[in-house]
Amino acid sequence: MPSIGVSTYSLFLKMSSLDAIRFAADNGFQGVEIYTSPYVFTPDGATEQDKKAIRGLGRKKGLSYSVHFAGGNDLANVDKFHLAESRRKLRKTIEFCREIDGGVVVIHPAQEPRMSVHKKHPLTEYPKYQLANLRVEALARFKESLNDGAVWAQRAGVLLGLENYSHVPNCLQTRYEDLVEWVTEVGNPALQITLDTGHANLEGGVQEALGVFGSRVVHVHLNDNNGKSSGHGELGTGTICWDAFEPFCRSFDGMLCIEILGFDDLEGSVLRSKAFMEKLLQRQSCGVNV
Image 1 (tube, one colour):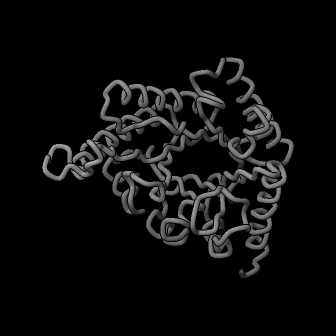
Image 2 (tube, helix red, strand yellow):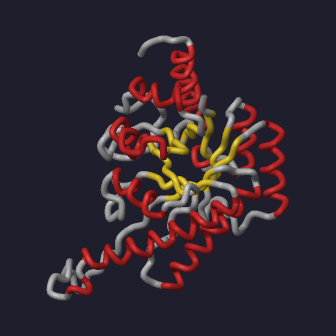
Image 3 (tube, helix red, strand yellow):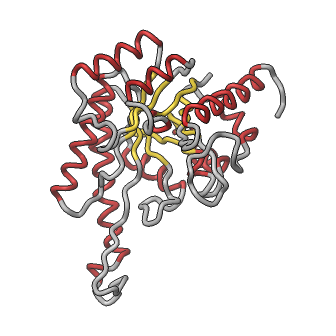
């Protein structure tokens, strides 16, 4: 059986990360994903007291942890100093995950470069600067980052979960198969896949993603949308066919992490989404066909 978790992203507008963890524990969640952002919480800024409090609360309440690597980092950056800093932050995030007894660090695929000069784009007459060639170079840097990250994660005893993100313009990932190919090429068991249901609903479908990713999925983000844009909506309020998702839940042994943002009712949307998933899992345990 999976564990039902919640991301601190779902509550960050009103709560600190530690308060969000307490909220999760008080409301019967089994796991928490810590959302990292320069505006909210960073592994670099976490004190020993912070880590001790998070670790202690997890042990006391039986919470499993994951950590989301901060957006804004670029693991394919052409600037070697920016690239080195992004890789350093990834390593720091992995170390933080280990220090709080976490199991998975979630990362997004990098973005391809978008160079233009005087609005001429792409620069078709100059092969070095054609977007296709720039993309090849960026992908090579990103794979190096994945390889380094997987080595660090393996040493720390945690997993990297590479998240499907192809709905975002200019993403290096353009199809589900890209993630599988990169994971296979790196060839380190510490590098696996995070399935985001809301993203998948914009990228070809949740069932299609599961069919491609298979057993490589080690972590799941749960959110809903209308199939047109990513809004991290409350579960059951969009167009995802959750009943079709139920067989996967039956066999999954990781965290199903609610990652929503209900602006008008942060706590309520989280608790309703939890009840939604509990009902889905209860139907499977009772042998009810859906």
